[in-house]
Image (cartoon, rainbow, N blue to C red; front, top):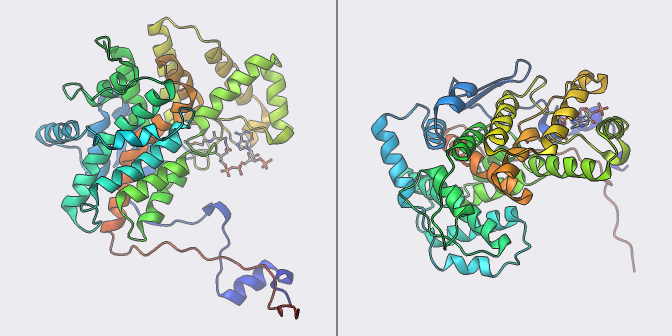
Length: 403
Ligand code: ACO
């Protein structure tokens, strides 16, 4: 008879498997020393350090070192790391032709993942996952070049000329200049933007086994190189239920504003699950309490807009939405709170980034975490190729018809 007539317990007995876990809600895929999350209490720590302390006191590159190497760098180690990353920001001149082949309407996330795959073709002799020096070199190259590729994706979408990196600038200042500078004028970095972006990048650096990091690990478990694994991670991040949510939040706020339906009516539609509409930037698989990153982002949003003298009605709208949702039983019962993506878009918009760049910024932030996990996995003697099982529910054996 067809296997479709079997129930789950028969199937699990028949195949010798005991777990069917859609979305890996209850399955650990690995042990890890990198990031600790307590979703009930809203705690996030990288290598033991609370996210609040890192966001207030550290830099993107220092946290990257911490995630990858397990300890904070000494002053000398950090200086050398920073200097190496600065030295590798240039892209091969030929790679620029790659951007010319794409339409200016291309989504920057597609540009990012495909340009990263293209980047790997320039370093084919340096990608052995088992060679520590090659892995370190690739780590530096990725940290240095991904932001440049991201800025070129942005410039391309605007029809503007690419700038060469200015390696006298810090990581974040260089990135801001590559995005917002032009060939005709000297670019003045605004320290408020620079500090806010540094903080946002730190908040995004790792989040243990989320969908994109699990993707990086799964791809890496096959022995695929770091470029291939990170490129896959970028694609996983692009979805609206994951990193794409920051873009989706701003689109949602824009639609509420344009339609004039009002926040309360929109929330009703979410609760009634009309057309599957969700409150984007709300809810999290792990946090069943306020996302600790969202708290920091919310403070930054107000600070950045105030210091730039911007009054954005979308921030008011977001605050109104949050207020209504936090007091509503639907959200309370399901323990749905703002996640990191809820307020980031408002800040990125104030900085001048177009909506379609938001998830690209998330990818730059998450890169060190992806690298740290890929390296941890490759050093773990217990690592096996990732290969989930399935429970087959299709037809039993049948004869191909006589013709
Ligand atoms: N708006 C309205 N209802 C929601 C939302 C939301 N944002 N999130 C969850 N729910 C509801 C679900 O409909 C479900 O309700 P039900 O029990 O009546 O069926 C219940 O809450 C449980 O939700 P699940 O989808 O089962 O939770 P899961 O852990 O699978 O999903 C996720 C988590 C994907 C983040 C979800 O909350 C969501 O889609 N949020 C909006 C997208 C978003 O902001 N993603 C960013 C995540 S953070 C990140 O990637 C950085």
